[in-house]
Amino acid sequence: MSEFSTILVERSNAVLTITLNRPERLNACPPQMADEIFTAIRDLGDARAVMIRGAGRAFCSGADLAANAEMSISGGDRAFASLTQHYNPMVEALAALPVPVVSLVQGPAAGVGCSIALAADFVIAGKSGYFLQAFANIGLVPDGGSSWMLPRLIGTARATRMMMLGEKIFAEEAERIGLIYKCVEDDELEDEATALVKRLAAGPTVALGQMKQTLRQGLSQDFTSTLAAEARAQRIAGNTADATEGAMAFLQKRKAQYRGE
Image 1 (tube, rainbow, N blue to C red):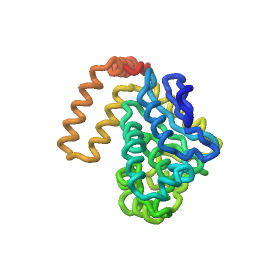
Image 2: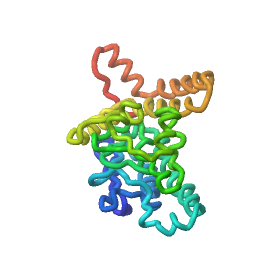
Image 3: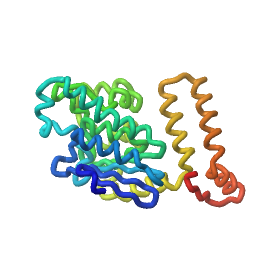
């Protein structure tokens, strides 16, 4: 789409694919890219799943410090403004999308790039992929929601290791410790991720969106509140055409054909 200069956007078979498109910078993410991702995901149209990926040999190497040297050297005020006005709205919108999101990771997912990848519902990575909280290495603190996501994904001890030691976590270990959904061979990554996102796009979209919402709410509320949230979500999902189709397919012993409505 012509209005974007740092990302590519494609729609095909109910899947919206966003490609971070600065391969010469390992897809480093300046504020403009964050804004463009935010704009792209606001217009889901008829998309029932989203895939986010990087062009070339990287997912995203983080914020573009080389291009924003003045900001990084001048202190925290500009960084604060950049996060609150650009990066945070983008990551929050990505995590809150009402459809499933898959991130395809090859090479580095570092800094805010790690946060973008982990904001997806499914993270699938090639063996060459790695996840890096690089902030301690340059005297900064994790951002983009990493301080919230990491301890919930892998526990406080492992989150502290990633944040304070600034070490690469390669895809095989990332899968083993529960940081990501799946690690595959590099030459299988494209096919695996595409098959997954197509499967999700063919699912009961409203129900999947409600699952996302109740999962997220459940991380910060008590058991009783979660039971109530599930009941509300079940009412919404149960009133969809897809729920009727799912029940009929079960009774007729056939595969359900969901339409996302």
